[in-house]
Length: 391
Image (cartoon, rainbow, N blue to C red):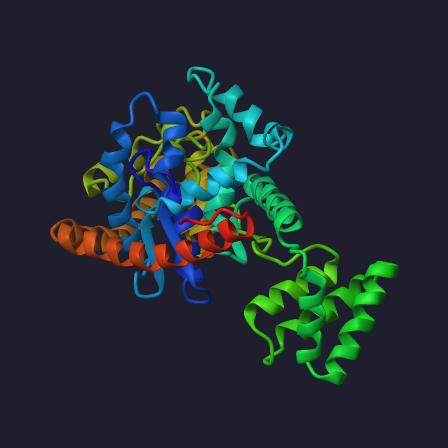
């Protein structure tokens, strides 16, 4: 997540709640993407430093658990940048230029000078962020799927270029023999079926067979995945996009909650500020007077009810608004109460962490150490495959 300002309810409902669930099921890496923030804030990076530690506190307060996931700051692990550099040597320029968000963001952010390599290359830096940990799944919204697809293409190209040594086939055949006669025969049959006839079912069965093997090393297994598909040893596995549900959290004006629209409720806004923002929300313009009937579908407050209110309250709002039996302030009160209830425990935990900055830094240092060990291992493998060996 990029540190470009205070986290708000949109971040919580769109990302953080999902992270809290994912950490229970997967080994997760969550990091502050401060280098990515520079792609749009390079002229005035002060907000990046100011936001970084606040962001980590908000993560912890929202329930991200450093005992289950590794938390770190991107710039603390230089291997991200080195892998990005190495991948940039093999990535065709056209691949970056065709990423949908490249021209879209340039159009939306006309006031910024985004004619930089950093902005063009940020999807490739994202690829490095993913591949450096050999991540299998990447939780993204629909608008980021193209970036994961780019990562898959880059990994595929890297493996094709550098996954085949002079003795690749000999080592692959030797690894097959280690599987035992029965499994070796099955694997060879499935491989032929896929490579000669394009049988996708055979490919899936062969992959599952390899995953189940206990008699071969990780290196042999990766080599056989490449041999199976007709490429090279899988040095950088291709990740898969794990689609997250689109956030239903609206902004105070009914648009997407965003700092650029000035329509947010920050996770650490004081209760009085939260109440003021919600009480002054725009409503159905047809309700000029208290006695005028309204239509919840045309009111931003209704979108908050869809997120926070139970069915009984929503029915009460629908009937009361359309019949003018309740006023807009009456309608807003259940939302105010629900938002304050949601924020209260997070704000209490955030206060505990802000009062212990040394604890927050210790959590980040621990996560950085674990993540960097993995990053170093991958980078060494990449450099060895490319023939770049430190003396």
